[in-house]
Image 1: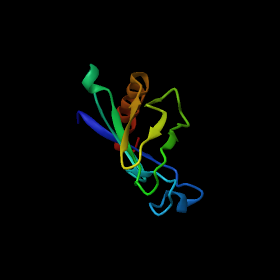
Image 2: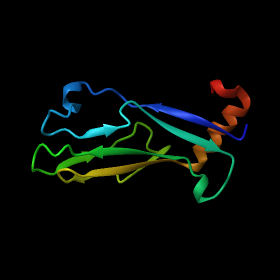
Image 3: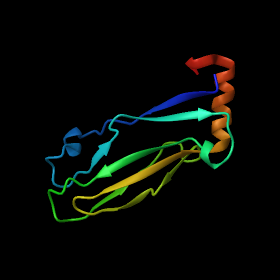
Length: 117
């Protein structure tokens, strides 16, 4: 097998109503529960494991909404852009990139343990 997928679960907000589109100051997050990286043994820029997250302003207020994306493992995952503003009715795509060193560690774990790694 030349590649495998690594899923990362997104934490559920403590106040889940804050994520509802009926709230005037809430961004819609997609995907809402998990991010998936596909790891391959290929090298180069195109082989860098990455996924994206979309933050959409529902447009129910005329104000720009601010965001900041944080990770519990900042040395493993790069988030670009990690903060910014979303204009009413628009969306911002966030890239989450797995650093190459950790890609290699995960592939080695996969070789040793199989898909359960």
